[in-house]
Length: 135
Image (cartoon, rainbow, N blue to C red; front, side, top):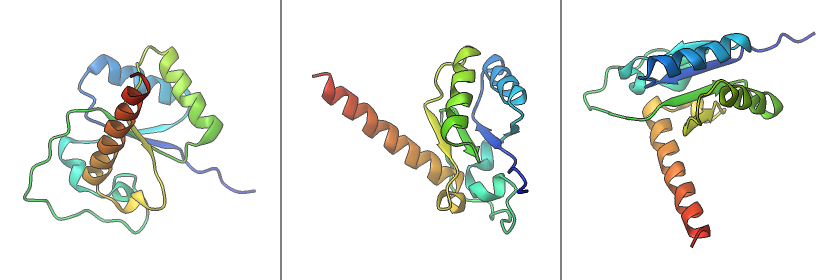
């Protein structure tokens, strides 16, 4: 029998306490572990933030990074389970979290900053695609 992997969600930049509480309650109901990230966690690799083996902390970066959006990073949540999580969030009154990602074998080596910037580019592209359809 294989052991089920622990589903985990990283939450970054959730500044609305009620919204954060709602998200955390949904995850608790679904038995998904939640880790709230600190503002300066952007400089760490996703794998480190998840506590994956083989990852250590990065050296503090001299640069600044400000990302004003809520970010949700999901580990080991896919397919029907992902649909269930997103449906539960909607039903709990948490409007769509625009910046969300699942952990992949590639992006676990990225810093949170790189993941945020990549999601922002993809989000902008998707919005541009939608606007193109509505013309």
